[in-house]
Length: 235
Image: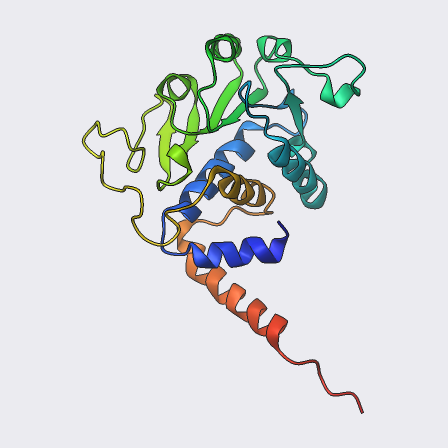
């Protein structure tokens, strides 16, 4: 998804919680990464490997001049003879230490084996982030999380204690049910789309604050006018 399409997607989602939530999560990701730190470890479940997010973050790292955004894709199954960048197994999560970030991305339950390794990584000082379907056990381990339950509900946030906030669809807590499936534009958004928004926001030179939303929309409007204007006459 190129920059113009991301901009149009943001315009469609203006007024929903998605823009603020994905930018907040992207900010947490950027903050956790150190220019000369141990790096970003990206891992999914046994059934889901976040290939596309790995590719998008790698692109954003190159375009934004932020090499720390380029992830190491950690895989549950590594076949013999695969190239080095595709041959990093779960043992890498166990070896994670302070200064490194473990980003778990999956619409499925992460599985006990992965949760145990993520727990070990957190105890060793690594930062744990989750972009998932709202798994309670994973959120309990994550320093910050963004949930896309079922790929259809508005975003939920968890910070520090793994708490799932409005839109998580669990129906518990004082704020549960404040947002639910189908609540406004962009409610039917999926995990893949959220990954595009997060990776694009992580690569921005300056992560916009909520106050800059109107200025962003003004700039987008001017960009749209430039893209749709007829070419100048040549004499």
